Length: 583
Image (cartoon, rainbow, N blue to C red; front, top):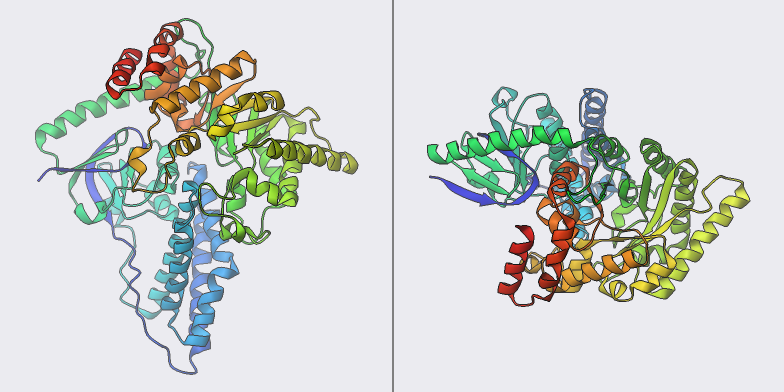
């Protein structure tokens, strides 16, 4: 019987093939108390399992093929660091020694506690890092299972002979090291129960340009091994057991999509301008220094958003020091060869797993709590360390500082004071930096949008974070599934805010970009052009798709239709205005 499942589209294209199921890792491990006197032997068994996984990861890292996605090495490094964190084994060892829990029981107890802590984090990107910890723990459980031949459900990927050019991987979730194994064999798509736009599956799928839909709840339970599937990575649809007619229709769409992707490559070197010759800047959002290479290859003229919190998230034992941060920022600056690199200062909320260098536990978990610049200003030494590292990188290119979530004058003044203090510290050390480094602000709080002159008067550039601007304007917690359907980028209030921000900045002759999801969505390109936007920053995989829309757009015509759209309050009026704009 044909039926469709819906999830989050994370990598465009259409895949058609047979399902290859990866069984969900079973955490229903054996629960029993070990005999008195066997505590140290059980503790050693757990430590041996950790060591075995450490060796496995090291072998995988060493054996990475030259053409493996660069993210693979980074993911393996992250898992290695999680595994090496003494805190991961500390509590299980204590449970073994004090309560005589068997090793698997003790480890899953700790894992459940950690996953519960991550579930309370509001930042979607950081929340998804819980999967890293779960995947590492599951690998240790497998090692324990192998030691005692326990009846732990296998999470081994299917036999590689089952994976072929017509195979679509279906799983509850996919660990990076499992994806690496599949990389050796051709397959056409991914479907997972878990994950979001920044999950590992999503990142790797995009890097491999393979259609993928994640967050398809219960997919791994409803799809059977060998089922024919269609994965529509653009619309987030998975069709199970399509009939011949439907299959034929999707094959036509697939061929058309593949031809269009091939054709996109021709756009790399063409100037980015509209039919009425309005020049548009396309910049990239990156999370890893290595992403800069992809950005350049696809024609980005700079990095509009470098999410520096990734560096802090990966060091579980301590926050990265100034030298380590400097090396990472310098790498991006070097790779961009003189093009601008906007380094956003750390944007986190509460997260103990970020590092042991600061008491992060006192931060709030609410989207309205202590996060982003609010947190940085409560940790001035950590903030100064990051500012010095960025400043040092600025001696070698166009590194620029971008501050998230500013709202108050006192926050702005204190931030600028600390930047000057960091400069003075480097002068005292005799270390080079660009004394005229540009400093920008993210506009993502309605209060900031409503008092924009404060920001125009104090900063060199602005960047609109539409994800948070929408969340805060509509009072929608993006991580709360109960209200997620109310998250609406087309809400009249949002469109009017965007228009006012962009045009106030333009009139003041200050650069303004959009770096949220809206900028990378080709279906919104015309809308943003009509609102006056000329600087777009997005995930590098979206650059050519958005560029294609830009090349077909007539900005003058689009702008002429904007007043009617902004005045449309009633849904039917707005729908008509949008239809006219997009025509």
